[in-house]
Length: 275
Ligand SMILES: Nc1nc2c(ncn2[C@@H]2O[C@H](COP(=O)(O)OP(=O)(O)OP(=O)(O)O)[C@@H](O)[C@H]2O)c(=O)[nH]1
Ligand SMILES: [Mg+2]
Image (cartoon, rainbow, N blue to C red; front, side, top):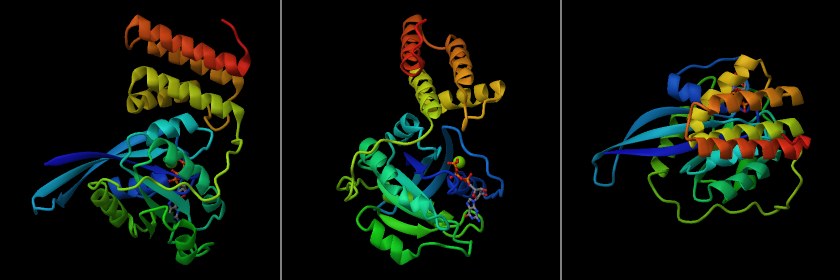
């Protein structure tokens, strides 16, 4: 029997989400850092046994979700339907732990039933700023387990994904707890990146398929030479036009009209344009 499960990796930029997936799926590591745009899906199958000892294959769909906090719509859409979430931090950067509330809050909203596995990554590096004990006390009751990993030397990576594969076969009994000190706060970040997030997710929603949508979106960014981490107003207008043009090849005229209308609304909200 085969079971398909969706899991995702979330956490601050540069903590090693893409690297952990690359290590697990392709047994490779790269020292270069290329920040991820949006979401990307990889797949790996794992063999387990069910409780009667029969072979059970888990087809794991692994969603790599970009770390920029402006990408809130993309994050929410990526989390939706996830049976498991790897919450990743960098053992050498305190800020990646300090920002955990943001990630917990998003899981709580979009995937309250997901199992959470906390990965403290980059365990190969010497300059670690928090210990296993620190993590245990900070994360108690909020995650299923805490693992120290290294995408570079591979330590615990296979183990973490196997653990996740195993626990996602079981339904979670209780919903994830909210962090104790949760207060609504105004999200910081670049206004243009927030607009970018909305435009991209609107396009993916129109297609009804984030995986396909993101592949198309990435191509448009390349073709237009836009740096997604610092888009200008003019570039985002160009992107919107390009997406609208591409959108014509999909779906029926009514859906296209709805997409167009929604896009105008989003642009109007940011620029006050009426077209
Ligand atoms: N030493 C060490 N470096 C790592 C490890 N994992 C990732 N890196 C490096 O950290 C940098 C960031 O890794 P990525 O995997 O691109 O980070 P990310 O979390 O996907 O970042 P975003 O896509 O921007 O959200 C890269 O230069 C990696 O080579 C690790 O376990 N050990
Ligand atoms: Mg990445």
